[in-house]
Amino acid sequence: MCQKAIYPGSFDPVTYGHIDLIRRAQEIFSEVLVAVAHNPHKKPLFSVKERVAMLKKAVVDIPGIEIRDFSGLVIDFAKKEKARVLIRGLRMISDFEYEFQMALTNRKLDPHIETIFLMPQESYSYLSSKLLKEAASLGASLSAFVPDFVEKAIKEKMRKE
Image 1 (cartoon, one colour):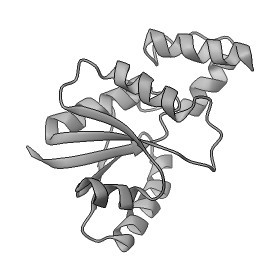
Image 2: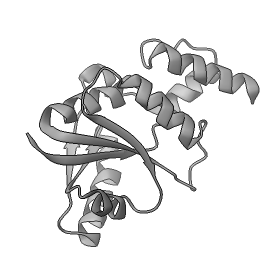
Image 3: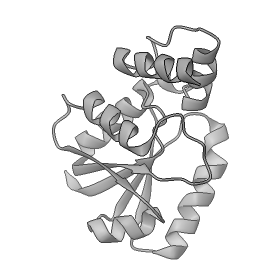
Image 4: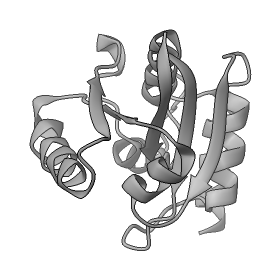
């Protein structure tokens, strides 16, 4: 087992793909901190507080996982947390260019923090929170993609909007 790793993201909402990556990371690193980003450029369906709560419930059976939120640069958060590894998920080749740019930018900001890319199980490789929210808005069942309590929360939130 290695050291502490941070898996940052918006997790709006958490999917089985996210949970799969958290499980994979937990098998590699002694500590995994899942960090929910305050991103002013995105318009999330759920508040940061709601996303943190959903993640905590989604990973309750995975030991050694900590869930917290953060603002600002993930590199600054990693330094504060004394983590030297960032975990990023790659679903499809379309993710690679953006994730590669972000990893190289982060490396330039702090060459002591590494980015590790993990791939989810094949059955989750096409999942995106954006796609799931769109499908839910059109009445699709999300049970194959998210835990039941997440599907219920998405549908409740969409009824209110």
